[in-house]
Image (cartoon, rainbow, N blue to C red; front, top):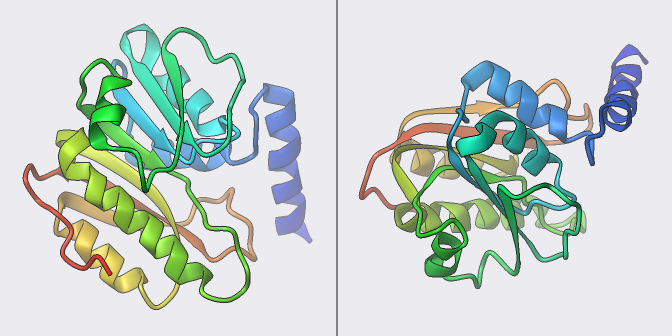
Length: 204
């Protein structure tokens, strides 16, 4: 009961503090733990709707930073001049489009809170495929020593995905923020220090 009450508190806290979703606190807790974003960074947020992670990133990067949010949905919240929205499919958008959105790039941080439409069957596999798509994009859009945060639903592909990420970043950690729901099998893979030229090896 106490845990559920805490989760309800995140929802109420988001409303009170003006965040678009309780998921804002997942990124805030990841940032507190691992400091993935810093002032002046260019940040790409894949699967950004409704925009809570964009809000958090925008607060951190400050006046010299830039945020690009990508989603299949049309996100119309007024985030300010430092934020640009791109409506599209991460599986179809060319790296050049993503780089153009930030003035030529590259990005210092790539975030992904993307999740598949859940059906109860094959959800973790589809989630892992979304993450591998993120890793496929990384060599073309992320600066050397850049950072990564991406959500995955734990399942049979999780160990291979984690190994693949470790092959591309100097430091990698799987983490479940306190703001994640008890019943959720979501994990966040956090990568620090992209090693230039490294590409994913296990893409299905």
